[in-house]
Length: 388
Ligand code: GLT
Ligand code: MN
Ligand code: MN
Image (cartoon, rainbow, N blue to C red):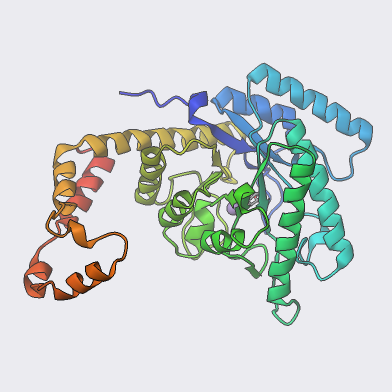
């Protein structure tokens, strides 16, 4: 039996904004004293995380002086060295400051769009300085409350222009950096452009350097829209675009909850972990979630440990699923190969098309076959609940 202890090879990471959340919400003030970035690194070191991510302003407050900035960086660097944590990913806060109230890259105001370019280039420099290889774009304010305000096509074009600009910026500076676009359907805006991972995947193909850009899907963001998260992740993976992942949980139809990974929909979390492990996903596993507002920092550690432990427990369950003889024999039966039909599949030829047209199918007998999915699903439940 595994001890489920996190190890560096699991690549478990947390954003400074996750364990650093002070519990402020739209209805209430903070419930925890803020911690410095260095203190948060020590906290993450204590719970066994591999890495830490940041927005420019999680590390350096937006109004910091040069001297303040240097001091924060020094303490942060020391904490990284002492804990062994790395910084695999960085991002820009393009949503918190009032200047971004109508978006950053999609703002109607050229001054705001230019400031967003400036802020992002500086944030990219900062991320690269700390070793980040993945740079995330989450356009929290890139949307509308009223569609009389912005042209949706212009907004897509403006976003494209900005991402193209940053790809060239990274190339020009010889940065070893890839970009990952993170979709969300709404909140904080009424509606956000490119609302799902699928939209992002289509958008990426229209860029000047699609090879530099992938996605950062987040469980909660797709669950908010009622979408099967694993299916979107699989599509991204199959397209070679799963550069990063944000793990958390969320009840559909509610406000943005950012729950501890696997705490709401264990079955969905299981299929996700099984997918990531089966295909050999090797990028960071980032927990983009928050501890309940009821917690002190001991509770925050419980939350962080819980995210990682649940992932590892589900990973063990996935191995159990893969080696369960009854489950595997049902799967083998479902996926049985019919060698007589094999020649008909694959690439089109005229002969193939003509011969497929001639096959006599006994629709009723094919349709009569039971597929044993009830049994399979219950075996999965038995396994997840520990009765197998
Ligand atoms: C914010 C958001 C997350 C994004 C972060 C990156 S910030 O917390 O809810 O989903 O990944 O900008
Ligand atoms: Mn996220
Ligand atoms: Mn989120």
